[in-house]
Image (cartoon, rainbow, N blue to C red; front, side, top):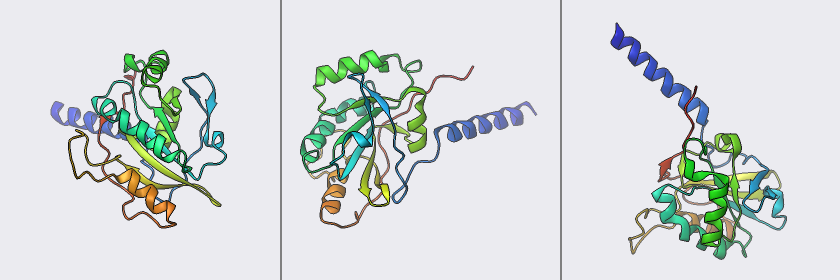
Length: 204
């Protein structure tokens, strides 16, 4: 009996965790707007980029080894595609109580050290993380600005090379934007996100 109760408790806990983190957005969904504090203490939203054709929204953090491994690639994405109308907007989804190296002050330190050319936003309360359903760091959402609003075009990994060692890597994010620039729908709209799970503080 005790074993059955334990299994039920574990299943309920998993259900609560899934409900809390929300369902991940998919291609065709509307991308929720936000107004979050950047490391320069100014609020940033989609409207902060009035000339953008779309956005590369990346949920990433200070601490995850995968996020660290992708830092330069995220910087490179912004440098390449911001001039083409697709800026990077980075959002830290981790709760600072659960991941003490992901506090706002430490985000500021990292952005300064790495000379981030893009906003690095603090998601207090993980509201936007839950609205997007971001599960890991990094987790990428490529969004188009259309007459019908901001529409998700792709969700998943930046590429298929988390170790940064493949000579023939598939650059998912770059390929998606190349398709959008040609006025075409991307051939691939979803891949498995690669990274550490989003850190949440323990419930009291």
